[in-house]
Length: 304
Image (cartoon, rainbow, N blue to C red; front, side):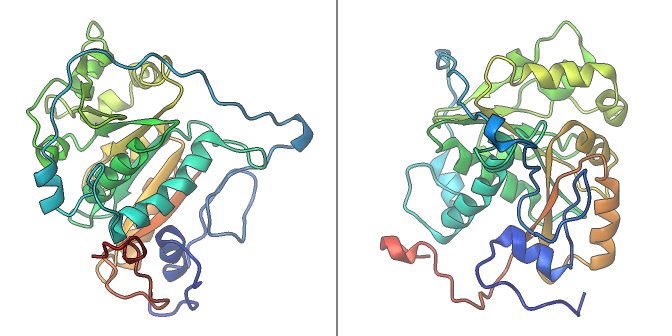
């Protein structure tokens, strides 16, 4: 961990983390020298046609109010707020992930790339902070909306971070075949942002996730809304077993690496447990120094 190549000056936090830990994301089809998003190109580019799926009618039901002051005090991206360093960083991060989810004329989309799992090796490395900021950033997109799923069933924190009340959630829908998962979704007053709570705690969360019903439930989250990106806030990989099962259901995994805290041994152990997903990237969190003098936000006149 103390020996690594100099950081690429133009790289994002995703790429810088990969360089620090000498990690090359894996993908089906062989190794790659790139540290960027891992997306397989189509075999015949002339046959690749990329079109936006039809937009579904906007949700017309009740919406809950998200406490903006709570978001601001916790350092989250604030919808319609000033441009800050953190909002700019997540603009860059989301662009790479959305490319994997949607594809382009030059790159094929990742299978189930619209499902993104945010994980870490240990608690307190910033996975929920990153998951929520990523969701808030994607919610600002003009062609996408986002569903943030609290999949940290033992210690859910998404609702409390947003100042919202508890509700039935994903685990309830998995446990009860008569409960449509759509009925558990909380629509917020932030345009493009909806929340699926963790639901009732159970000692059989891993077994429910490994059941055949899980795929059916997850498919329902996007089958009527192809523009939706689903972000899962996972439990830490080395602390709870559901993380490794969740990885088999998503197209992209983002492993949060806490600067100066996450050890290489822990990281590699966590990555081995995420092997159910072929597209894994690292996100370096908690950096206090930029060798290139990054000052995102200041260009817009706000700064941090």
